[in-house]
Length: 256
Image (cartoon, rainbow, N blue to C red; front, side, top):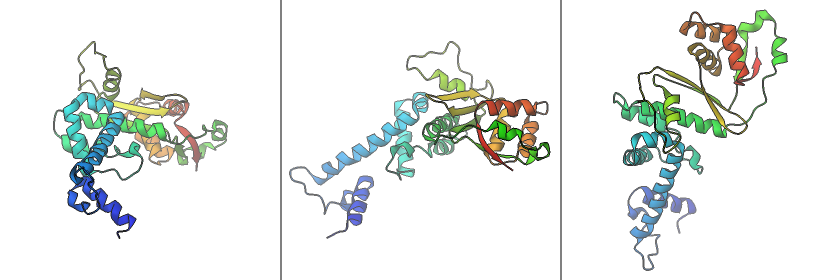
């Protein structure tokens, strides 16, 4: 008598491989074992595809149904679901597309996928209290450069050489039509995603603001983050950049 674990492993093998992995456990009862397993295989495939379509609607629109289905099926072979929660099946899709489309005219699809996955992460991230600005004012000026900030769990930054936010906005309505052709060479995009009470806000950041926030998100001190901002824009007003990212609610705590 096989154990439950052995039975589960045999069933999984049949879903992704040969029926021989489990034919000894199947009671046909009028329906061939292969056809019985095919029902489950189809459910797995369609469930995975539905989850991916819900996670990456813009990528699906950009590539079209046939292309998207093919890419998802290939992705599922490389990255089968490791969780009982279908929300996470698309976690590695941006990296998968980056490798698959590298050097092609469609490589920007990977950056769009990165933006869509960041959106999904922001949706389910934990909540956090706002930054105690009064406590921040109590820090001695000589200690400012040593400050390390905690950024909001429901905030992400996605930077790209392509106009990601413009692409995303153009694909939010099925019948939406652009008044002007989309130009992929219209400039880079640095998008902040942050969850508000009833929606995920997306907004473009300046090069300096983006560099400052990305550095703080990586755990850099405020002094090092300031250097990162000035490196990308020597004329940037650091104080103004810090004030903007604080006002956006991206910082929630700090320590020396």
